[in-house]
Image (cartoon, rainbow, N blue to C red; front, side):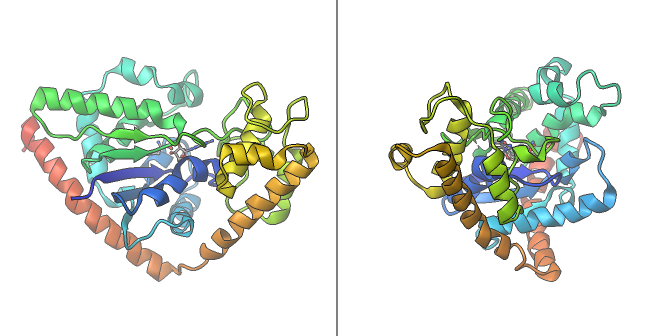
Length: 324
Ligand code: AMP
Ligand code: TRP
């Protein structure tokens, strides 16, 4: 039997090129080798306030983005988290095993919620829901960007704790963090990751940006002092731009450096903008290909398949814990 993958993204904000390079690109690359489950995690989205109508629309839009990025519904299971109620149910059981201190150490919570009087409890327990997502499917591999590594470590700890206390139940999942592209940085501040929630829109290239916007954003991107175009750690802005170029052009690191030897920043940015625009063009065409009915059918089929596996795991958990 094929090994399993599980991953997901939140239907909030606009997906950017960091989400693509850090996560989606690898989902597509791995889908032939693994039985893959790609989820739209709408329950995670409400850990921060959302407009209900917008959330529903974004949930469906994100499914279209998965498809346009090349996730093949004939090979993978694509579904909406809330269509499989076992995710919320397992979260409760796991949250009874999770220690307050473990969640207090999560850096994402510290960034988004700590010190904010109005932060919801859901924002705090968010990593437990993520653990439930993964563990329900007896997942082998979880392709994610660098920012999710700590959440995956918690997932592994919870699985090990449950297995120790109640008997072998969950597979212990491994992270898949790409060697290049796991942390694409903001175009405006190379010390910050490119993020959906960044107020400065010039920091991110969104997958649905038009050619003009992309070109302007790249022209305005901050650079480092000096003139060389290379992957030097001390020149993080150029390294970040060159990484984007490398991943989209398919060239090796050495080929990229050789390609731009002697070029100025202006020329480099021009070629980078062209590469990004050319890459996103077919993607932006494909995203319009799925009408509501065919999308519905894909998601319904996905939810049924996911549910058949998730319910088996949850029944086992309920039996082992004496709930049933
Ligand atoms: P999210 O947008 O938080 O739902 O993230 C979806 C996926 O994109 C996760 O696997 C993240 O780790 C990944 N990701 C988010 N931001 C970046 C970034 N700047 N660089 C690389 N990967 C990222
Ligand atoms: N927490 C992840 C993020 O914000 C999204 C996510 C939820 C996820 N559940 C998951 C990623 C399970 C991988 C596996 O990016």
